Length: 145
Length: 495
Image (spheres, chains in turn cyan, green):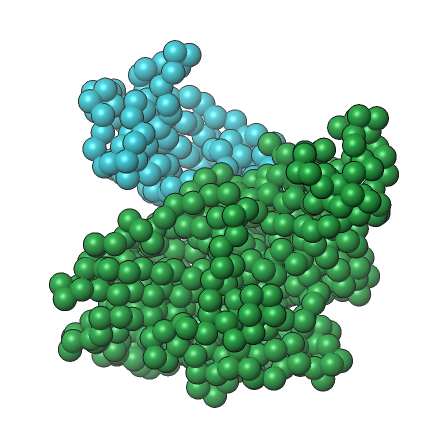
């Protein structure tokens, strides 16, 4: 039995090398509703009302303390932000819960970013991780994660 | 800072930084004199990007896409100004359908941008209170206090954003406006969708008016009187009959008595009557009306200016709201015609959202919107051109010169926020004089409510510092207290 279609939100800037990973991977989420955004804004909360599942796909700067591989994490609402036009995924979920009393199941697909300079091409290290990212995306689309 | 160690008897400076709930990165300094009284207050913008330089050598047709990247909040304004300058360089007047579609796009942008400013950035101050916990004075606090209003704000912004996407293909940085017109027409589906959304959008702005306007008679009276209330000039585009205009129009400048000072400006593709001065302490330039000089030539742009400059809006509900606005804010000296309080910018934004919603409906029911070409053929234009658009924050100028190959040899961008720079500085000064007990006591402390009021004075103008310095960066602001010798005595920064 297939999972109900969900919403996939890709986050990033395609003009800043690996920061565009979230947009690239999210755009390959066949069967789901896809939204590509530079950053998360409050009105996205209203779009979550109509879905049961949402996946945020974003690049994350690699550091000695983070995994160099893509990872899929469950996500909970967290409404502690003071910002109003640049939110984290957990804060969009919190807005949705507070405003519309709706709590879709949420996950975050984090993609390691190695280069965030000006340019449209991915770094070799980021490109090498794309197959693994696609596996995680398909797993979420099937409802296995 | 410790009062015992503060050289409080001498002059000093207070800095408020970073400023919050604005677009961009700025700070405020309060310079004291030797007696501990306020000598001057300044609003500084510290960022610089230099679009005017690195666009040189590019084909002018790229300017829409390039300059839209200045800002993620008001890219449509840059797209429109670049498109209008491009029309003249190409010698291609957009067909009527394209002109209407461009206006529709601008109305959508003004609607969503004003919703962001009013509901998300500014309403927490008056709904939660100036003295409320700053950690709660944000959208989440607003939701807790008034979820209906918060939903209305989010709904209005979403409506404007989605309209832009349906029309132009993307919510931000769409390349839809091009020299000579637009890339595509509107579909019947999109037209129907917009008309279906309008009733809910109208209800949302009505709710905001019902919540906000009564506060002006009570808890916000002192802010209304002290947040940048002073005579000045006002600049905006008007339609040929003098009505409110967010499409093609001509520039009019009026004074605080409502008298027309200059009309039909920029028709010769020049903005010679506007001059710019730079100051060493800010990356934001200081435009002024040249014939009156640097300080006397202070003028304001944006929602307040547009309502002061126009003779009417031209749609029924908006004209009723304009009349109510003038009854409330119009000065006696102007016969109730002109509002001089910068705090009234917030009220003006709501009136303009009404105007945008009604204006959309007018455009959508016009049969010409769906008929005819949307791009004109170029017939050879000029080598210098000025493109003007009314951005949410005020009048925006793109002034280009090109060589024989159409490559840019000169770019000058005059941004709405920059044109309000002198007024924002004067507003900060007025708030500091009104709300700080001078001379300062020995144990100086920059109280949070004071910090917030100084910031709120800037927020009246809804500045977009990324646009106005063409600058990238974080948003926030800082307040610094300096002595007469320039030594920092106290500083407050929000993370």
